[in-house]
View 1 (cartoon, rainbow, N blue to C red):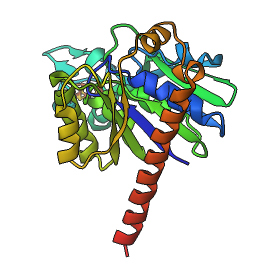
View 2: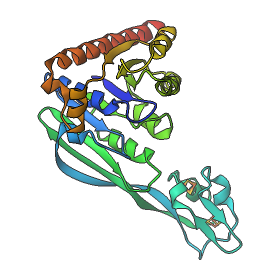
View 3: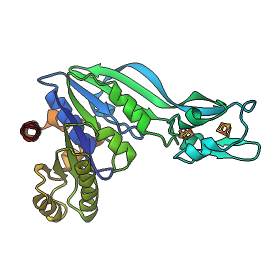
View 4: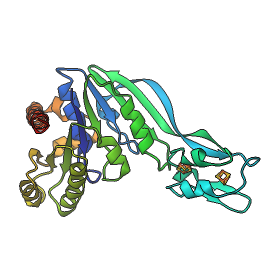
Length: 292
Ligand code: SF4
Ligand code: SF4
């Protein structure tokens, strides 16, 4: 079984379109799990249209100070790596929006004056449609702490199915939380200067994580050849090139998957997946041989 993450250095590249169409195609032959980890703007459900069956709140533990015990020694603020605590002469201030729920302050408090209480950061909704089990996270508006919600979405995955992960755009903590542990990362980009810059950033990130990757160039006919040149130089396979097409853009705007309307795209996505499978199997083979 394979964990396949779809990522992009920035939003609006067509990442979700690739993730959704790939999952729908694969679900014609096998059970697929779709994890929408783009928790700030989850929208894959608009295309896949699952019937949601459960909703679960997700929280992170935040410190609560017992002022009957606290002697304002300042140890908790010293150990907090995220500056989420400030200790004054007779007060300890907790900044919940900065707290990562790591538990260090409670662990190191000499007076045992800190207990932990969950603060809700969002919800996980799960359901299914045909042969797709669907899970997404919805971060509360204004909430900055998305990685714990992304981790919670990923924990919902069973490990015995083909899994497609729609990652948040960018290369910061949320994107890393979504793609780490994947078997392969599909990087979706556009052939423009911005696209090239963002591809470089996301490619460096997946390389640092040790993940094999390949590129989908969306709207391949609108820019120049520098993205392809970059891929050649870095030995980064171009898995699929998608020309701009008003009819396809119109379908996406209406929440319709392209593979059902345009059979040619079934073939394109099948070829994309076949290439990924060969690359993943090659990476596993090389890993095994290297360990001998
Ligand atoms: S470490 Fe404990 S006792 Fe010291 S300031 Fe923080 S809460 Fe108070
Ligand atoms: S739980 Fe961790 S991040 Fe939150 S305030 Fe305590 S030390 Fe800081």
